Image 1 (cartoon, rainbow, N blue to C red):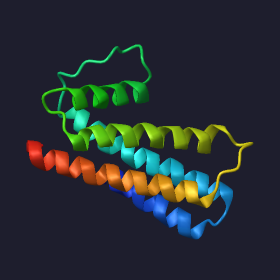
Image 2: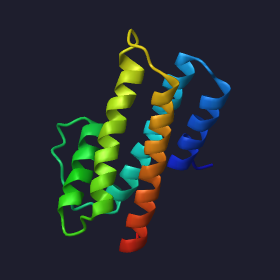
Image 3: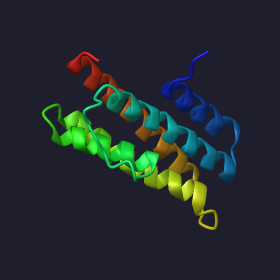
Length: 132
């Protein structure tokens, strides 16, 4: 069985509905983030020529690669938007996971899911344009 970025977003949506608590919202934001992460990884995997310093952590390398692609010949408004959304979603997920003394509202989880869906759509448009 294979799991996709869309599966992470789907579980985020179900969690948002079924777990109407702050921890549920934090979990939903985290799952949405990982859905978006996998969509970004899918793009980068198709462009192995993008080399990022391996001393960076996995997530940082991925987002640097997306940013690099957005500035390359393949760059497009969609890819630039995707890179921007991914960074913001990463920041939101960090708050959800690490800043547990701060309030995390349901609206934050909804924002994370919306951003992940936007990234999914942007990835699809990018793939269609570039045949990947």
